[in-house]
Image (tube, rainbow over all chains, first blue to last red; front, side, top):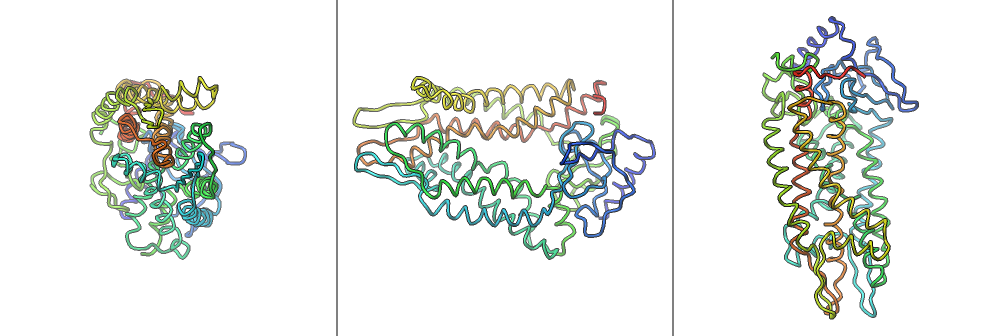
Length: 251
Length: 210
């Protein structure tokens, strides 16, 4: 933390000038109340934000002193009211559990049939990845590639990356390339479109339901559970907490 | 560095790392935590956002005029545009589905392009900084939902392989539509909302603390 000192000094001068508005408020999850921070609290060594002295808002660039933050609390920027960070309860355990469940559900979702279509004596089954490869077979290589990125590539990167980062953190370690992996995981969040695909599946269900008999396969239901688990896994650990924990972990 | 608002990190020469959200002096060049290069503001943010938005706007026309789906059956060929699909659902009395597709495929992309233009203008004027920041966050979050129609095409093509009886092929509209969604997502990503707050302070429009 060579550079943290200068950040801290910038902060001290900020505090001396008495700009109270630059201090974030703690918003309590339970009742939504806001309490001003008490700078008296010093984080314990094993606290994820032990080394964090300053925060800057991503949306408005307000410079803020890191306030005491406890499990289950979230911080809101006082200037632009954007969420700054959420420190979830049992964040590591929760993320690991949901990511592990997501990995299993993802395998089930791709292995079993997603939907089966029957018209007369003909029957055709679709597995999840076939929605992408079907497009490629029809000559839409770019579209097929994009769809496979949104529903296969990004989720694999998210689930695998999260497990790669979180599991070693239990013994306060980080594996080689953790920084690159973390960067890719955070970038993949935006391109993971499982829930949008689910809405598309429901629309196609209604579109085809009148022409033929459609049955939903095992993969459809595990896909629903996958969406819930992956959303929960991502929601359980805030990027700022993940980076702070990775920083403190031993390589 | 007086052009930045007093309470901003940039005014003190501190930059927020785009990747790991570490605060470090910008003169270091690279983030001491993750090694990513440091900038006070995203470079060329507005130009890039404008360019991507204009590209998305132009592609919006083929996306809606060209068919997204071509159905070949013994009854003959049948082509479907996005609006055609909405009208079909509406005529069959499936009003909720018609509204969902209309919302995801027509309303959201148009609203997204409009709101990105509004954000670019706000980054110059600095007006209504707080609501504009909220619009930015909603725009970033909502963009992906427009992809619904592309996934419907993917599922129909993947599912309906009933030999010679009926076959479904993707149309050129589907690719243009996916491109519109991806371009607007990149446009929202390249926009730097901090510019709104810089402009707000420069024009004396800084909202009072909440």
